[in-house]
Image 1 (cartoon, rainbow, N blue to C red):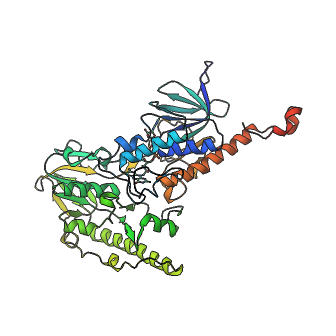
Image 2 (image 1 turned 180 degrees about the vertical axis):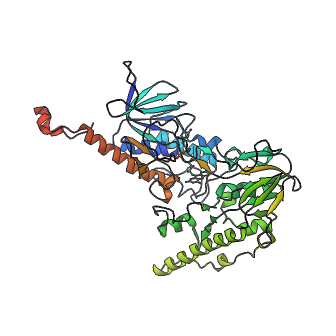
Image 3 (image 1 turned 60 degrees about the vertical axis):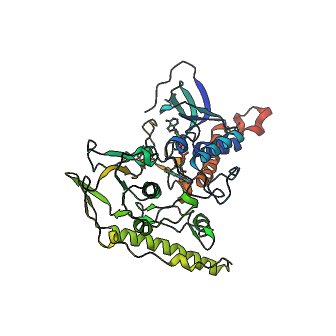
Length: 438
Ligand SMILES: Cc1cc2nc3c(=O)[nH]c(=O)nc-3n(C[C@H](O)[C@H](O)[C@H](O)COP(=O)(O)OP(=O)(O)OC[C@H]3O[C@@H](n4cnc5c(N)ncnc54)[C@H](O)[C@@H]3O)c2cc1C
């Protein structure tokens, strides 16, 4: 709903970027390139989520040569190493400094409304109002932790979301159930098992690409095979998570190996009655699906190497898969939490977005942003950093940089339209300047 203009003077800026994570910084770089005056507002610190929103031992899922912006390499980290999370945050702080990004930290955007009767937005912030012609929502894809309502909140055990997990010492003594086997869940479960905990891991449908094959990391293979460029998930795979890890130097996620080391794998967590959890009978199917995905990447890589005559070392050992462990062939369908000694549950079950502060007509009936490649249906509003915004890479470090370039170009183009005046209306001495947006 448009706000009512007040007569009081407020700070104005052409383009306001909300969020100073990697998306906001990429946006600032490209807006600067396009000569668009802008301001980035970050409620905490630059790249805060990499500092305080993730567990202590997290390293980047992709190697340092890949998971970065084109304009700067990581310092002090080898190209094929996986940057620790603090180093990732430091990288973005250094990057913001390098490009002299106009970022104001410690300022939260609390509400955005369209201005009444003219383009642009009235933005309420914790430091006072701002008016902007254009607004970029770069608040990240992972804003609100999601925990399915399966176990009552007052159950006598610790329940926390993966975004609240820090390290094994945080959990009470006893066994742990980790629900969700994407990159977060499987890494947390592995860390807990290495710390000597009895671990149960609830595994849903997943892809688990090889960490490396024939001497090349999978991020390289996905690039060469054109898979990063996919514009949408294959129909039917929207809820298939991806299990990859850069931990311990980078190893392929292998659920059967984890089971052989003592982890108990379970199917999808479905129900809870009187302290007994029920699991779907889908574990063998999910594991087989993950294996098939793994092998399909090897097949595509081999075909590609052959087609283009690539001289890469053969890697037959990569095709040797572990046998199904007992927990897969004879799955546990019910688990009495007390009998199993489970004292905590880590829900690695994903996130939702929260755009309650963005009170404009840019969302569908389910609250999802309506946009095309980040350009909202509400003129002047842009979204950045969301999964599949334009392609598979959109929510990742390197991918968001390219999306930001596209959006900045669009913003600059729209400024040109706004600034345009027919030659007849331009002042005679400056007729040639009539199409310029300053
Ligand atoms: C566990 C985990 C590991 C990941 N590992 C990798 C990896 O290895 N490689 C990779 O490429 N990607 C990885 N990702 C994906 C992605 O790179 C990160 O999620 C990244 O943090 C997203 O950056 P962003 O800038 O889009 O959002 P965020 O990092 O979430 O930044 C958004 C910023 O907006 C601020 N903000 C939010 N609301 C407001 C408001 N109203 N006013 C002002 N500021 C606001 C927040 O404080 C935050 O700093 C990982 C994600 C997770 C969850």
